Image (cartoon, rainbow, N blue to C red; front, side):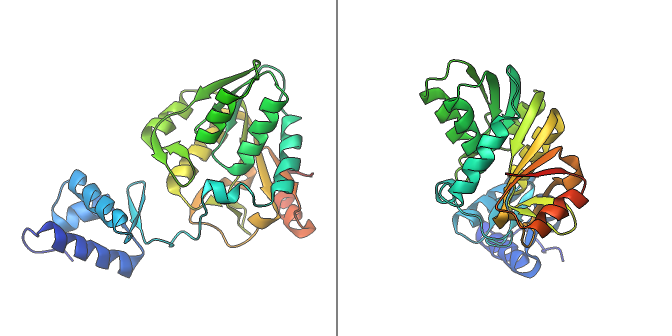
Amino acid sequence: MRASGPLLPDERRRLIAERLLEQGSVSVSALEAEFLISSMTARRDLDELERQGIARRTHGGAVLPGFSGHEDSFAHRLDVAAGAKERLAAAAVQLVEPGEAVFVDSSTTGYFAARKIVHENVKCTIVTNSVPVMQLVAETEAPQVDLVGIGGSLRRLTRSFVGPLALAGIEAHFADLALFSVKRVSEDGYLTDPDALESEIKRAMIRRARRSVLLVDGSKFDRPALSVVVRCDDVTIALAADVARAALDRLVSAGIDARSV
């Protein structure tokens, strides 16, 4: 239902908050049409609602906080399943050929893989949107590891760059290998993540790489997160640590070369 007449910003934001509660999400284009405002005004309203803790911004709109499922900070996730991530990193490094270009996403598992590459001084070029990976390469003596850092809008929760500039940066490159992880693997064969902006970066990396490697531990097989990254059969290899046999069979059935590590 379209609001009648111009509204004061506070009243308009109150109505937008009501739409969020009713629908779970809103889009910038829908707000433009309903309230007869510009896209810039709609985005400012959503930014203000996010500041107030009422909304969580996504690409092209907003969702209710928590609607996409719980997502912990990078620092918190770094210590979760650390043993499994170490094994995944060791297996991933074995797939890197000397001189290759390697996409590394903003996941903590990706960070473990990058750390292994740097510590072993594997001759390669890392292309990443992850601030911790950039810092790792910059601060460690590994002369054979080159770095291409992808910039954009900083997402503090994951300490990564996302948005149009980051996406354009990924799409300006090709890589031999993409090392990435996701929040969940759905029962019907989709890889999913809580944030739409993170998902589009991962998706671009997979599509721009000759080979893509999913790094996954046993915690990833649960209810799906909000945003689809790709289908399982879009991935070349899955390295799995502490994953139950039934879950591993699910990856194989989806068409992935799944390997337990």
